[in-house]
Image (cartoon, helix red, strand yellow):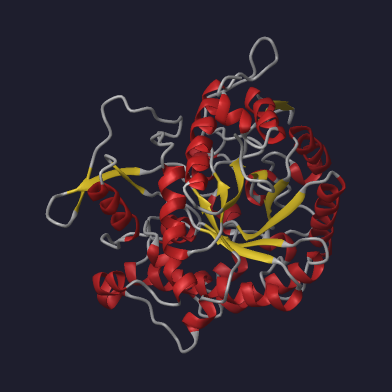
Length: 455
């Protein structure tokens, strides 16, 4: 028993989290370069200035990816490394770096999946209003055209935006991520609308600059999981997964319906009322420019049940429910119900563009990194994903988060998500037990995960 023929096995990372060289080679500043200087914003004052030094060590890292047998690597492009001011004159050194990285991946038989925006918004454009500025979608489209003109002869897979719920919600409403704003709710929704419009314009730009490229975007998905296998609880979980019933950014249909249906969900428009964003003529047709896949970032789910009156009731986890080092509940079935519900609703092929966990692991006295929890976690989630595929959900690939331990945003270097351990003082890389295990999973097209979760 294995995954479908042609299933893509990969791993992922993001530019600001691994590249370092934050002030080198003509790179402009991002909102994260600014935010990490804010006292108390980041765990122990950590920054992404050096991170994993991937900018200079990319060749070594690509070699390690080949050792793992990766089919594909999902990277992100640093917008301010390419265009220091966000618009205008490009940075030749930045473009050359991504040329070298893409060429190295291809030379090692690894397919690049390029994410155009993974949160490092150019600081100069933030000073002009950032995502609140109605010109922001055009800025992003200009940058997208530049990237795809340069890389489109070798890159055929693109993700426009990574997790708009996070960079808009945490960055512009809750203030815990860059740029650290706490806007009014209606302003947050307007910024989100501009981000979605940027996605649509980016899709159009990619189509104009390439032939046959596969394009999607990657929201974070925290599905609601049925507390039992009754039809009533399954229906309640499906309903709750897409319902808009709270004033926050952590919804699914609000961010996905415009892309796939060309409209905001009616329950959201009614619930948000006057806070709903201003939508200009043609905006929704631009946002819904056809895409080829839906990227799903998933780490956890939440339990619900039917309340017996046509509604939904949240169900708390039992005392002692297993959790990751990040304190996220471990819910393998989120990689069953999440893909199933999304495929039912949107009828688009899925890519699992992120899935993984933080573990408090370290290099042992024998020189290894024995992260058995990561192996067990990943095996459980992959088994749930395989079951979803068997039940008719079209899933084309799985990207583990992440390839390297890295800068975990506001948590600094405290959280370790990598298949490869990084000593941030020496930059030494050590393949964890999970990396060796994942190689066997890839070699067997998933059979190793389905048969046995042991190292």
